[in-house]
Length: 208
Image (cartoon, rainbow, N blue to C red; front, side, top):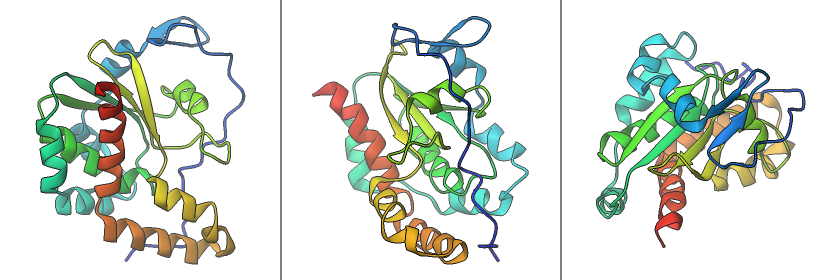
């Protein structure tokens, strides 16, 4: 049984970082400049991440196991003509990561034109800082969508938009346990459809 009293580990409190480099394909670190391609290639595939997960392990496996790509999403995948990369900043203990990343793994598995790698919040710190939530938090998951040349075209931040609107509105009136219970119920009902659709919206905005 899920323990809804466990606080979400998704909210990462970080100190301010230097401003981003002017080039859209790079990000600043304290020691050197790292391109998005280099950071992506330093990440791990979802299968490896799943094997290494030490927290929320059952939920990671359950969500991936029950995940699928609806026909409406598959049709959109089949219309793609160029390569895209999903650079996901995620952590195994995050209650939002565990309810979004497994479904994005299915999305990438169903198309040769979408690939995903996962990096830790330490490695993806500046990506999180540059793509904050509507209430100004750096959070996991943050999924950067990159084109075939590893240029940034958009980001999926923390939660699907409908759930995020609820979480920052009516959800704020709930105590921690009730909030988590309602959030998990939303995710279980949606089964990743809105997450997959919103990532595809970002990709399609680059086509149109």
